[in-house]
Picture 1 (cartoon, rainbow, N blue to C red):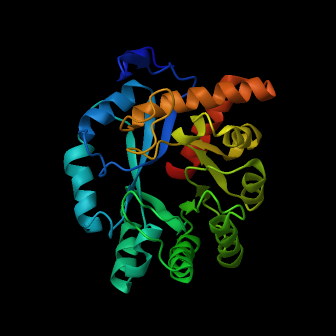
Picture 2 (cartoon, rainbow, N blue to C red; picture 1 turned 90 degrees about the vertical axis):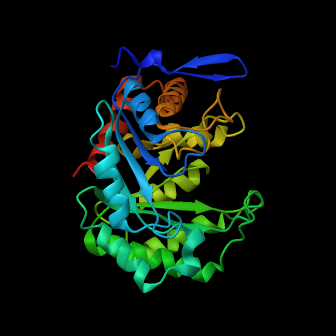
Picture 3 (cartoon, helix red, strand yellow; picture 1 turned 135 degrees about the horizontal axis):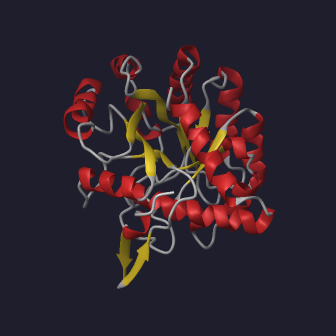
Length: 305
């Protein structure tokens, strides 16, 4: 346990929320360190460590981040890793489905090159996004283009036997959960890497979780799982086998309740984990520390090789 965790606080509407003392070391298995709009990366990492985060996996997208893998790795080595009192840092390299139309051979070569970097732990985030993003005016690419892009990168993960993280999203009105149906079919056709496959930021129901766990996937839960309307997601978390659970922030997006609306950062995973663990204990009667420990051990198995 981290005795100084409670000193990390966040304030929303004059109400201060302290990060709870974690029951086990924490791993933020999906972060975007290059995407903060109002925070400095070094300060967020120091707060993360103080809140009990010992491992952080951040994303690198050669299209969205507009830089080469060499530049990204150099940024980590020169500016981030020399810092003291921060979590261990790993990254995944891959092209988000937004970038599928621009996934060229040269971009693919960047993803391949990243896998030769000792700091790169796998491929991600890749997948399917069928949602119309009106906030950023981003329309989904044709489904077949997205599927081809996902399959290409998944095949690389299978061949290199590295873990992969999937981004799957569809419209709230899509009760068929088409992105998940299509991704399931791609996984069946291309394969699931023995090193691991993670459904990042899971926001679906128990039945959907169970289908992907049967394929051998891990399920990562983030701040959105704490939102009041998402009881079905918490039900899914409570039913996910302990050897398949993970926590994440997807920062700077989707800070957890009760600080929803703030710019999310890795330290906030302590709030998400505490909320979900306690909710699961209420539903199942399991030991809280065993749940927290399982999430940590799963993250280490996936990303600390």
